[in-house]
Length: 77
Image: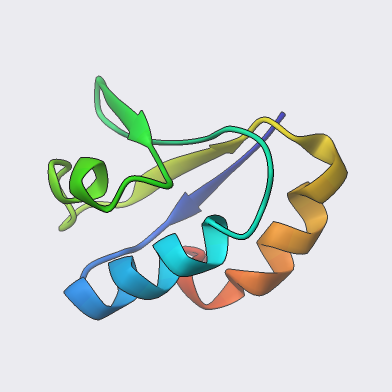
């Protein structure tokens, strides 16, 4: 499993992120504080506090590097 910190602070970013993540097999979780949702669920993401950084857990190591490369624009530095 790999974890990274993201910023999804606009509706457009959330839509694009869900479209990217939806292409990959495996489980992806987004968490904010003590709340955790399926990263493929646009409604779940909108239930989180998008004003603060989110943690993405990628449970499929086979696609983790490819996913990280594709969502590079959303990763917090």
